Length: 116
Image (tube, rainbow, N blue to C red; front, side, top):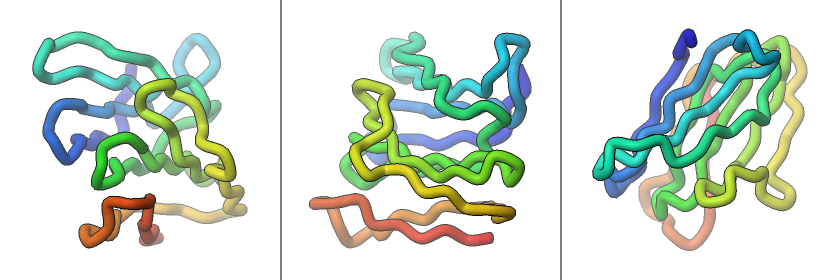
């Protein structure tokens, strides 16, 4: 396992740790860890080549994740199910996103910006 990035939920209950390259199983995994119980909650295996950046929404229900440039995919994931939200995928060709910043002034929806 080679981790590339970490994100902590706003309530500090969940830590997301992502692999920056494909594992021996053929995909990159995002591990969601419950910090209060110190146990693995879920493994998200959406990305094939690696995860470069992540951020939680202010409510903590969503995780925004960006793949490595070779894959070029940004997604909004539901933390509870580990699934991509409806209309929560964007394909970015030859883009490198180093940071995802969530708008601190909104709780009603997911509002964020990416920095290359």
